[in-house]
Structures are given as C-alpha cells and as structure tokens.
Image (cartoon, rainbow, N blue to C red; front, side):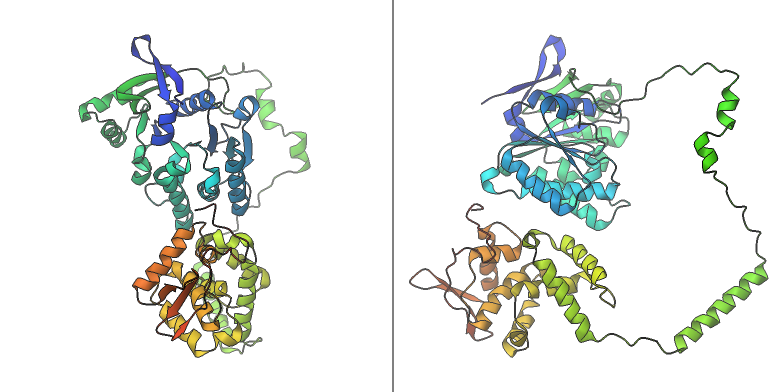
Length: 504
C-alpha cells in the first residue's frame, strides 16, 4: 500500500510528498545547525505518519512527550535499569504501541546506555513481531559519535553498536531509522552512510557543507546555498522524497515542544524598589543563611616540608608494621567468586546480555558480598563465565579430560568458549549432545543457525567431529580427548525453557 506523507511546500506551489513505504526500506538522515528546524521537521513527519505506522522516538531533551496527548504515544521514562528497558522494548514490538523514550534529566553516558539497551530490545525481538516501525533518533551525534569523547569507551561502544544495528541491519527486522544531527562531522560515518534519503538544513561550517553536498551529489560551489537556508527550509533528496535535490519548506504541526527557542520580551520598568528586591533577603534565606568560612591563612613553606617528611616516615612505619589481618585464603575467595557467578547466572535473561553488562553486574555483586582482593579483570571474568555456564561439577572439573578441554579452549575467541565448554562437558560426562536451543542460549542469541555454525567452526579447526546417527540424533567427538557425547536430539527444547523455533 502506497502512503504519501505531506511534508510541506515545494517550488511552484507543489506539495512536498514523502513515500512512507519507501522510507521504511531506505531510512532518512536529517542535518541542520541548532535552530534550523530539525525537531519541527521530525514532529511533522511523526504527526503525519502516526496513523499509518508504529513509531518510537529516542528523545534526549524530552521535547516529543507532547505527542502522547494527541496521538496516544506512551512515554517511557529512561530512569530505569538497562534490563527493564530491554524487556519493555520487546513488549513494545509485540503489542505494536508507539512510544517516546524520554531521556531528559540523565547525563550523556546514562543516555547512551539507556538508548543502547532500548534499541537492542527492539532489534532482538522475535521474528513474529517484526512489524514495521519508524525509529526516530534526535541528536543522533550523541548516540553515534564519530570520535571518542568524555564518556567511557564501553558506553560509546554499546551506543554506537546499537545505532549501527538500527541503520545497517534494522530493515529486515522492520526497523526504519530516522536520525537527526546538528553536525555531520560529529556523526559516525558508518551510521550516516546507510541512509538513502536526506533532508539538509542550514549549516555554516565548511566541513559540514562539504559532506552535505557530497551526500546530495552537488558540486562543492553549490554548497554555499546551505548558509542561506531559512529556518524550516531543507534540501531533499532520496527515493522516498525526490530523485533530484528539491527545496522543501516544512509545513505546520499540531503539537508543540515543551521547550522552544528564546523570544525577546520587554524588560520590566525600573522602579525604586529594584535595589530592595536585590539586596533584601527573602524569608527562606533568613532561615538558612549561607555563610562562607574565611579562607585559611597561607602556610609557610617550611611547615609544608615538615608535614611531608612526617607523612613519609609514618607511611614507612606502617609498611614495616605487621598487618592486623592475615591475607584471605585463595580457595575461600574463589568460592565467593563462584557463588556470585551462580547467583548472576540464575537470572534467565543473563544468557542474552552482553559480557560488558554482565561484568558490571558481577562487580556490583562482588562489592555487595564484600569479596576481598582486587577485582577480577574482564578477560578472566569471561573465562570464568564460560566455565560457569557449562555447569561442570567440582570432581569432574579436577579430572584430566576436563583440564585438557580447558587447554584446547585457549585457542578459541572468548565469545565462543561458552559453547565449546557445554559440548565438552557433555563429552566428559557422557551426557547427550546439547540441542541447538541450548547452544544458542550459551552463545547469547535467539538464532539456532548461529549455534550450528559454531559447531562447524569448531570442526574446521580440528577440535571436534560431528556425525549423525540413523535416527537423526547428533554425536560430537573430541579426537584430542578420546571422548564423545551420547546421541542427542538437535531439535530438542532448551532445559531453561528457551525455544528457538520462533527465531528460525
């Protein structure tokens, strides 16, 4: 079904129409300096398409929450845990509800983590719920920065990965990305390059004008026109808009943002009471006066040197003195770490959370349990996590076959060791070969095909040999160990209740 959205006016009195079905397949990039009318453009697009397609707005400033009153969008407060946001996003796709993710009040790093968790939940929805959805991300340069900033590398990688999935792989899952940015130079190129439709507004910097002209297929000398665009005027190009660069004036909207551009208002007339208003404290100030203590007098240099020498001698005495508490036994510390790991893996959603999120959860649980010693580094955590997911018991873990399996696993990347350990555990204990659903959960995916590809990957590296008996059951042999699993049904459901049939 072809649906045209009226975006405003085009030259010669024509209407600027946007093919909504084409937009869902080709995505949209909006660029313009602050005050150029980007948010107005997005609001026009959302209002005109609200009755035709499910919508999701990633709103860092809380400007689009007013859509809820007229168009029924549900406002999701971003001040939640990442696990909650991921589950909410999955239910949104299941029930086809239009939402606004309000991130106002959070700092930049929290906004990036929340947006990553929410977009990840939309992206990982089951295949049965891959309905068309318009995903609008305002201020996209915050969530897909071109260079590292003041936020942590982990938050940046999570957010950039979610934005890349949205723009690069979201189309097959029904997700159509619409991203708006103040500066193209601040937006990651692999995210911007996936858009096929463009609406370029007013910009002044040479580097942004050059990138805008390149995306629109214009000559560099024509880039000067971007400086002359009025507010609400854009140059449109793309299969959903126009085959040639087309000037567009965005039309009016029915809702308004909570915040607007500053307007000049007359100053109050100066009166005789102006000084009294400024210098007379209010009753509240009288109750809790704020008094600053006078700064201490400067300390002589000789006194500073004396204090430093005393501190150094005290530190040496403390090092020489015997410790009051003996060092904790390593066996006891390992037992505490294993207990924390088991508690964390008891969460049914733990299998589908990435290692970075699980690592942060693990550190918090260690602090709660007061596990002594230095915190476990991320590589060591990943290896312990893979072993814990295999569920090997203590006596078997001390045996020679399992120790050999641990040595073989060192040749594999960290992210696939968990699947290797589960198959090796079945071979060491003589248990049936794990099903595709069990292997998929160990890999943290809903796709059984990926689990089967991992077995092929292990076989290509000479670690295992996979064969099928006459009844269709799978047997995996480990030539280096001289062991093999019992026959197991590859299509059996997972022990934890996870079913991959929907993912297929």
